Image (cartoon, rainbow, N blue to C red; front, side):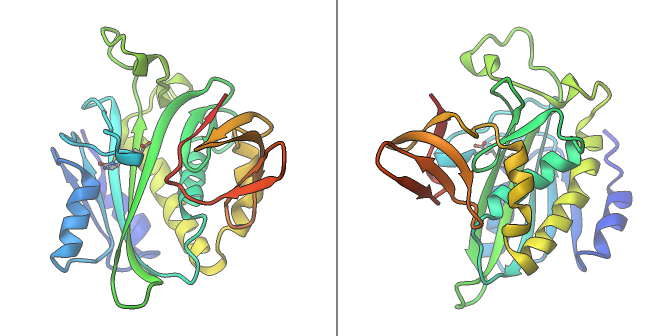
Length: 258
Ligand code: BTN
């Protein structure tokens, strides 16, 4: 596949000085590769794409399965010294959704950062953010932002339960390829991270709510059952239970509609 990495690099480098872009045919997991490099002292900004992952990882310790040629898998290493990191994962999901579906007709967000096809509860993509400290200051960290997006329909021979909840970009962008989708989402992502660094989550709150697929629905957030009210200015999930409104902040909780 022609990734046109140099053209992409030219778009990004003025916003992210020193960024490199790498495309490799295979990696265990692009997140793991960048985390390992950070442990060895390389903490420079890098966008790493793998055409195939042999041990892709998802949130909550799950596996991330993506078939070669049918998906886009990449990670962005982003050194940052942000006062407040809350809401980062929502901002990343939103930036990807806006890049891929600027009109907002097709892509919704399921808190904190899954990309779902609107009105259909099928998942098109997921995001795994991991961080490592860069100095003793707790605010100064390298974020490794891993993104997996389904581009083409799944193999018709695949009839697993997972396949029934599968969505892909070609459902409304028939010409989409992994490379074209990368070009659509990379710049919005970088711009959103820049804004987040200056202003935190609050400038994104309304746009997140417009894509929120859980709004008004009954959800189960960990042990908590109630009606999803929206998110607050820190990106916390607000759930109305029978007794109170609870704010759920941990992305390490599984949330699903009932
Ligand atoms: C999820 O929905 O559970 C998150 C999935 C994140 C998958 C991406 S693919 C690129 C990067 N490398 C990984 O091993 N995981 C992330």
